[in-house]
Image (cartoon, rainbow, N blue to C red; front, side):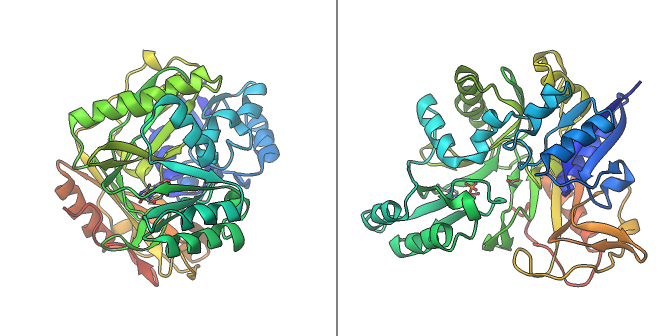
Length: 420
Ligand code: AMP
Ligand code: GLY
């Protein structure tokens, strides 16, 4: 009998992972909680939210789940993997102790210091007054002020000077825009360079690198405007070199896996360090303990091996025994969002043209649902349109050609994803 896999989340990332799992002969059924109109076409959606751990544990039991594959950040720090493992369910994802790497930027900074993992110089503060005094004494140096906890990718504020730093501190610690995620702040030096997302499958002792991807976090063309969850991505990252790849594998991913095991928190699941390549070398900006969104949407179509075999083996600490092969083709993903995102926007608009895209183009759903009128918008990020091609340029041209065939009221997307 085939296996039954549980995913938690409702983004295009979860749709992309479900799409890839569907291609595995080992997978019988996929359940996505809560999912969206896209996952409903390949899987059974379950009406449970990522933070409702008791309900998810019960659902795993009721549906006879064999593997939980962690994609989104929220459930792990709340102990979903610990609870499911206790109940005998195989898990590809970090325990609460290992998820600390993402859930607490303050803890992650200390960890990186202990293990010589290159990162921006930083200080951590629990009290507003101490953080403000540190900024006042910083001599107008540009800084980044970060809420330590989980803030949906929006908790880092990049500042040019002390005035902006104090303002950011106010937003995080006094206005409390990120709630308790802002109880502790990390203030770090602002770095210059180019960014890339590293991903690795991990089983606690072995890490297998995925290709590098470039993500576009700001809302508008030219990387201006508000921070979003991600407006597009492409892979492979253009500027990446073999030498840099080896350095990242050794000094970042390798040291992290070893360090976590040494500290009694072996890291299982997808390790995703966000990196800045500066003139003086690679620096970790943050650790994520799950796949990126929209990074997963361009990675899954490039994965040639069986995702179920990889993650099932990793769940058992046997990642070294499986094949992980990637296509040489490039992939470009463009996010179609509701106009106004990430601030206020309207939903419930009918999406037209989904059947007009090319057969080899993938449309992964995020904020969508089915109603009597058809598939309608239900969130800020609505779809990720992904095209593949021999080069990033080819994939980019094909992605945009197909993006233009899809329409809904107030549709918004960046026009410079993967532009040279
Ligand atoms: P984070 O949530 O920590 O990944 O930060 C979100 C975004 O803020 C990153 O993708 C960068 O663009 C920017 N950022 C974070 N830390 C720094 C830093 N130390 N220097 C410059 N930019 C940063
Ligand atoms: N695209 C960045 C993230 O998923 O955090």
